[in-house]
Image 1: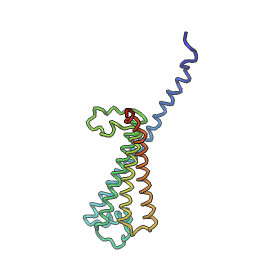
Image 2 (image 1 turned 90 degrees about the vertical axis):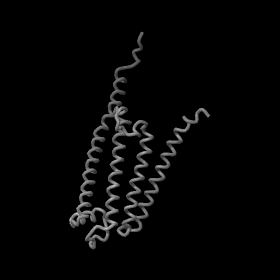
Image 3 (image 1 turned 120 degrees about the horizontal axis):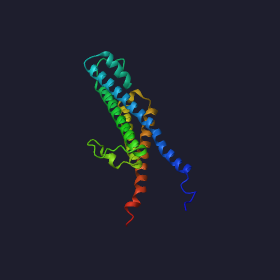
Image 4 (image 1 turned 90 degrees about the horizontal axis):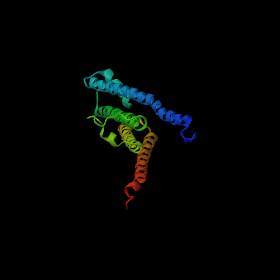
Length: 200
């Protein structure tokens, strides 16, 4: 005799609806892909300006000086080492943010939306084989520290263009990012350690 209370259709349908709601995140990841395309376009614009400025194009040089916020922009008539370094760091910054976007898009989709079935694909990222919410969180924190380090280095190279309190606050924010990442990694290790030490 079947129990009429067991597996009622309304309760069975509700978990399906809740589980299917994960696909609402799909437009978010598509939006991040669009944001990455914008970063790629910005990267090539800056790179073209750098190449043109190296060959003496004053308009490209002015665009570079403005984009990096170089203080002595009035006196700049040719590329110097500081401007090149600031532009290259800006390009590295774009690459690192793009890497962060890839981790969020691929790792987030794989973890929270649906499997991508890349196990036999030769280009599958090595980290994707063991990605989960905790691993993704630590990797994102590490990537944010790297991006913050680039920003801080750019600021100190061009320190004459910033007030002392700006330098101080950027340093404090970077230290906070570093401590936060260490706390996340420590918490993750603390939560996973009982499984490894269960037999002791």
